Amino acid sequence: MIRVELSKLLRSRRTWTTILLIDALPTLVGVLLAVTDLGPRPGEGPAFLSAVLTDGTLFPLAALAIVLPLFLPIAVSITAGEAIAGEAAAGTLRYVLVRPVGRLRLLVAKLVAAMAFVVLTVLVVAATAYVVGITLLGDQSVQVVGSTSVSGTSLSTPELVGRTFLALGYAMLCMLGVAAIALFLSTVASSSLGAALGTMSIFVGSSLLLTLDASEAIRDYLPTRYWLAFVDLFRDPILWRDLQAGVILQVAYVAVFFTAAWANFATKDISA
Amino acid sequence: MSGDTAIRTQGLTKYFGRFEAVSDLSLDVRVGDVYGFLGANGSGKTTTVRMLLGLVLATSGEIEVLGRPMPRSGREVLPHVGSMIEGPAAYAHLSGRANLTLFDAMAPRSRRAGRRARVEETLDRVGLGGVDERPVRNYSLGMRQRLGLAAALLRRPRLLVLDEPTNGLDPQGIRDIRALLLELNAGGTTVFVSSHLLAEIEQLCTRVGVLDRGRLVVQEELAVLRAPTGRILLGTREPDAAVAHLGRLGRRVEQRDGRLAVRAPDAAELNAELVRAGISVDELSVERRSLEDVVLAATSAGNDTFARPDRPDGPASPAVEDVS
Image (tube, rainbow over all chains, first blue to last red; front, top):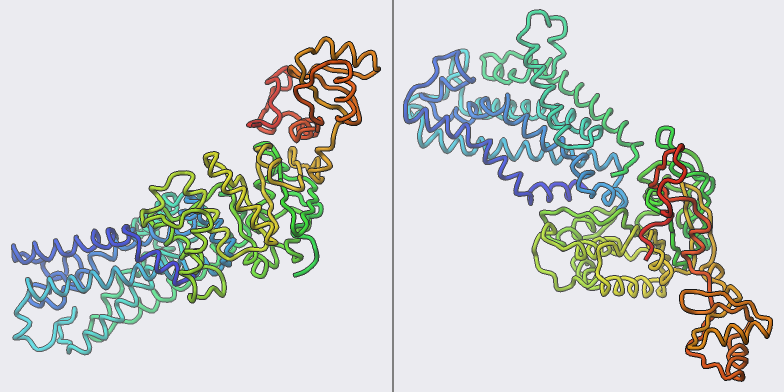
């Protein structure tokens, strides 16, 4: 079933359109930076963006930092929100289930497909940004040995590559959390739009609560609390505290919402 | 999985909230039957079909499909069951071929070897063998219906459960599908067709169950339901003379839309009596109860009419609608 879902994902024109649209923003940012040479000052704007004018190879990270807080979660909400509700609306859900495809298997396959979508998007964004970075931005990196960490010290290239992969893994875990919420709502809502919008309102609401001092008591449990903690991977030494908390929190969200999705879907009457 | 019952339910009941959609239903479909499941829209046919396939969970009661309990044994049973539930559905952006390939790949233990051949053979069966790669989005209703049937037939099922299989087909298409179903049945496939089209069931089925407001009101061999009424229909150019003559012979005669219904045991004998009296006979046939009569007698007013209690004269004669 997983293979079937992946093949459906790759053959859908919408998948590629979405990825292209997501990819457009960081590319536009890169081009604008290259043309104007006006980078944000260190500490301002999206993470890493201040560094890319000196070192273009950092642009993939900057691009991910641009895409992660908003575009990627929206795309994941839509993809995972459609998982069950979309099949139900198209009428294909009943035919899938009588093949038979077990309900748990279907949920797992849908979650895997949503994650495959994230991986694909991240890879496309990173690759495009790398090309943009080395062709348009920061050719100074040739003179500098290694790259600069957020803390100001130098990172060797292998270190940088390793930390980049860790950061990608962390970002994907965060998106898995989003996908699990969207999947649960998809088993509840009768329209995929409802499930997607519901998921988006959860993380928009969470981001809003994070800015309030009054929500101090619950802030550590909000789903978006540690989303940007991957930046800490590029400090020297790595600041693990938020990353650890983030991993635990996201794993908990995935477990709770996936279980809820299964509990709801396993005994649901499929009347669509 | 043995035994000679294809589908058996006992006391099958389904509530949606406080609404009782299916009530104490005991179906009995035998292997080799072409079983017609009749009922007005809203009578609970589709809910029943969904319960048989494990899509909707029964509130109470037992279901056995191909000798195994459902939905518990769905994994073993469903691969042998082909179904079409409330119209066909497919991934609209893919071609019919791609859809069948995906559906084939979804089934447990489905092997890639021979998949292409299975898909092509099934397309041929339903008359879509020559279809191009256009997406299903651009299919006509009839083509979608054929594709839905193809998806049901993919794994050479032993039992076919079809809900309104000829919906949206033109007369030629209806005839094709009927011939296909009969051919499959001759090859040993049990066919369970739910429909509100009496004529369709009448031409196809060997056994009939009639559902009315969630209750099974009739379950019988079609041949028994359509037993002769003991009257013979007579068409003649001299009706007055015929009535007078038959009255003298002591036979009861009624008018029936331009023909005479004569109570007589044997058509040949009646013919001889009339010819002896010099009355020309244009047409003679044994009168049988039509399925429509049976259904109308067994069911109450239509399941989708909700007349106000204070206006009992409401809609006059709905009962099973779309009767053709």
